[in-house]
Image: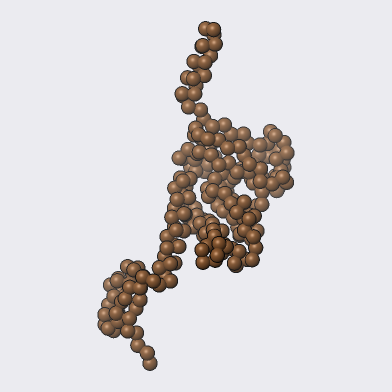
Length: 231
């Protein structure tokens, strides 16, 4: 039969571990590093996915539990929606599904933003509850994955209202405790209606959020009032 003369590796330190290193030494097997292997290309992609997932968690001040694996899942989906040079400018989603990725691209949102969702068993007089956006269920259907912090369950829906604004660093703990999210001062974006069929007919049912103003703004308003009185 055939015998192993050498092992090609891409630099992973596990191959130099004591349990494995003893075996090739006893069998006179060389360990050659191959810098042009396909495994090196995979390691680069894995590193990019890891960086995307960790950056998404850091940006939204989200804990690893229970969001880490959802962040990696969302990063992989975004990678499949990006054009690739070996595919002549096409995306992996196009090659695999033979569909246009435009709808999935339009429905993607930043990982971890607040999504207000009204379940179908509720009436229009009920207020929508805050969820956390985890990504899309599938790229072909492009439905939203929403995490309920009170029940620890994931809801799949095609309609929600998103709020992408600057949040307090402890917003996640406030949301778990049922307290106010405590929005910090910063750029404020109005709620965006993603679907005309979403049950928010009554204006009183919509959740209105106002960013916290700074002390400088208050002092500016006071100075303008006094100047008017003197005039």
